[in-house]
Length: 107
Image (cartoon, rainbow, N blue to C red):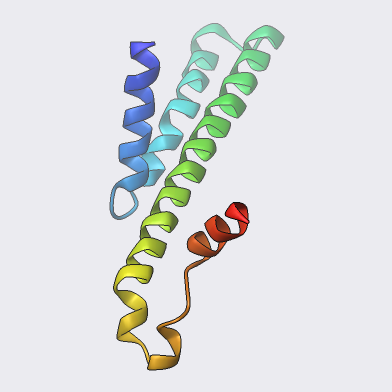
């Protein structure tokens, strides 16, 4: 469990990093490819590498999806508190998509 949390936190930090550091997340997916020159290409190894590659990328995309939802929610809260009041008066009664969704779920 501690290993999972450490890996998850590392992936989350890379998603939040500025610039192109997000590309470092591809490195763990490619590491098993280093086994091919050493052991040769066997069907079992090829299948294992493919499963690892797909699983790692699904994990990274899942964590990135969660990161994007959190960032979107924070931006919507900022809009509701400050942003809409910096716009013209007709926008002061508007609400963010997050606030509208919460309101619809309550009804």
